[in-house]
Amino acid sequence: MKRLLAVVVSMLMCSVCSANAVLNAGFESDEESWYNWNDQQTNGIVTTEYKYSGEKSACRQVEGVSQGCYGQQIPVNPGEIVKASAWAMSPEGKALSNGAEAYVRLEFWNSNGPMSSGHRESEHIRGATAWKKLEVTGKAPEGATEVRVLGYARGAAGSAGEACFDDFDVTIEKGN
Image (cartoon, rainbow, N blue to C red):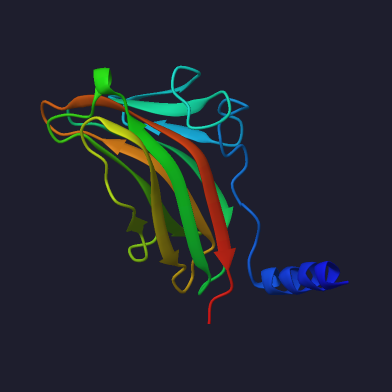
């Protein structure tokens, strides 16, 4: 009886949040549900070479002044709190160097495109980095209709390297 009560209380408390809003969070179905964007100077691949869990991860290769990401669009309402995390790494032999960096980013959009406020970024990784959980939280601004959750990598003049992302987790909570 106590166990049943605990489950019911847990379910009621979770009515203010949602389960993981990201589909194919670990890239086990390759790029399904993700868009792969770049500025012609980066390359995105799904690979079995590096993985935090499961069999695959998604990696961004950076060279020079460049940027690219894997992303998903998720509906939101103004005032909702978006919490996102992902595991990220940069392998020793292909370490992010000379200004190259990777992070998890939240971008809020409305029907006119990206909004000028509300974007948030996690801690940035640079250099060779073992798997590390990157987390970011943002509040959907007035007028927001979606959040884009991005595994982002960018470089600077003379930079190079690779960053991999795995096991994204996004929850959306009611705002106040």
